[in-house]
Length: 483
Image 1: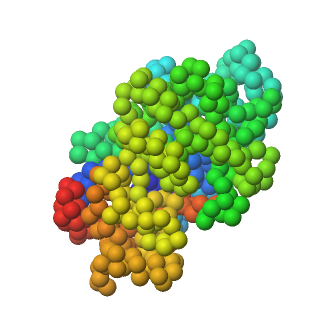
Image 2: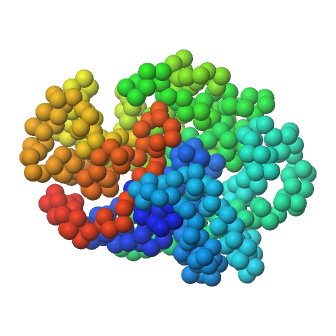
Image 3: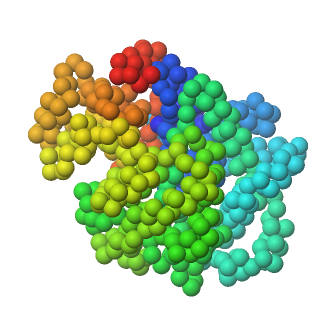
């Protein structure tokens, strides 16, 4: 469950009281991990897979009540704002219109006595300097993509940037403030979770947004043309989700250039993520073996080509620098034998999705009797429907096979039957979407690939985390030896 899905009086989940309450619930339910989506700032429709920064935290997750209790806000600053009327959904239009204005009030009160903290935070976090400067430039340039800025800004002329920093110091410090506060709250929450036996599993998107601080700051690491526009972009070929494929628009990596300095950019990324999380789920792992490359001028992904990725050399180099990483490899999608071999050679656990198991048109790789212990099983991921929503939408023969295979009785319910099937498997880790524990349908689905405007909105209602539910989860977890 993502941070955004926590209950809140202020439109979106935060790192405040409800997050700590969720940790308490997980402990009561006998759980060991809480997996979240990327915590970086999302795009305007809520997708954190297209962020303006690969390292920054989402300012909207900063808890306003914690700022109020520290004396940097008054309740009247934010309590009466219309954050959206539907407690089960995030209204991103209202969040985007109002949240930063409240944080600016807090910033003006905070900076009076914390300027030294800001300097120290900036000195320790090189990425934060680039992020805050990028965000100030982005807003100063009418929110246009950075490759459309005037050349001195686009090509990072040091003298011009120094002048901009001097004239926009307060704006730059505001963006630094959001990160200083975000990570203060994040690491406090992580410490609380860890002290209660709960590890945090974070999501590392394979690609970064072309229009982001990271690409602007180090363009040599990406496939850009002479005008700094993306030349080749990421996506995936036509499949069951989209007949024309998916064009994600993220700039592809210049792997040859990255290899010259032993993948320093990636090593820094992993190093930072290791402090943020206890385990890292690496999104789209297959792209390290080979990745789908699309001409940035194409309207869809149908004409893309597969290109060989950095392979095992990449992981050996990173491990030599950082030691063995705790990684879950998202090895879903079009998987070849070379991807299978790469996963085996790294030793990372791959992913199994129970909702994929019963499609008779596919291989039986996702049937639990074919799992190996070095894997992580999900009923479904954020890209899938909930168990109940999935079951309602599949063909009769798939329903029949699912019910028979998992021996699901009429009183158990499809969601609990599939949860039981995941927990009873040999996979060393079993992860369940909160929506499935709550028995919700398609209205609670987090993301539908190849769609825009309907995703990343689901929120859990207040009062959903009952002792009765915790006991039921605990019983099943204990029954299958997962406590």
